[in-house]
Length: 193
Ligand SMILES: [Zn+2]
Image 1 (cartoon, rainbow, N blue to C red):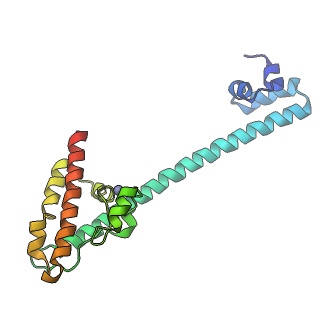
Image 2 (image 1 turned 135 degrees about the horizontal axis):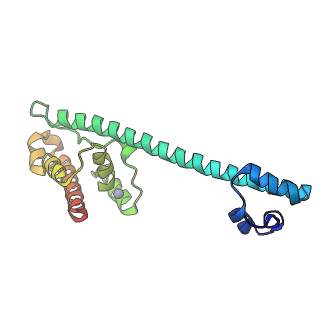
Image 3 (image 1 turned 120 degrees about the vertical axis):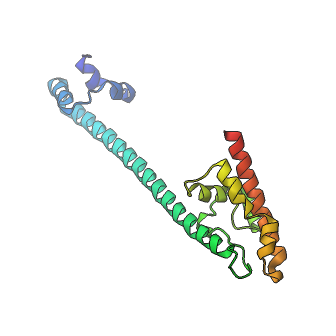
């Protein structure tokens, strides 16, 4: 056990914080026997302040964890809705494609300057490859093989077969961009294996 005076009279918060006993009763015993009232009170307040800050930090961490969970659940839902839309828009029995099945705005959250520039281009996609990746990961199936399979349906030749002729140029341009994004994601998976 250290010298009780150290807890009471040390002016160094660093030393104090390091040596102060965790147990409240033990602390009170030490302080009661050797500290003037004002010092004792100050020390107890400091201790309460530290406890509060620790609790606030823990709550903030829990909040961040919960927000992450909620975001992942939202992404999974967006993926499901988008996938359903893609499946029906590109099915053989669907009417000619007049509009590209874009990812919803809510998941297009990438703020990189280059991506924002690409997204703003006329005839561009609402999503960059980072947005696409975060939605695809929500499928729970994300892998290089899965990406290679999914990429096929975005091949410009495949989209060309399904296009409404009046929208052909735009849709092929968008499909080309989407296909290239899949290529990037596949290449990233390859290099991360
Ligand atoms: Zn991006």
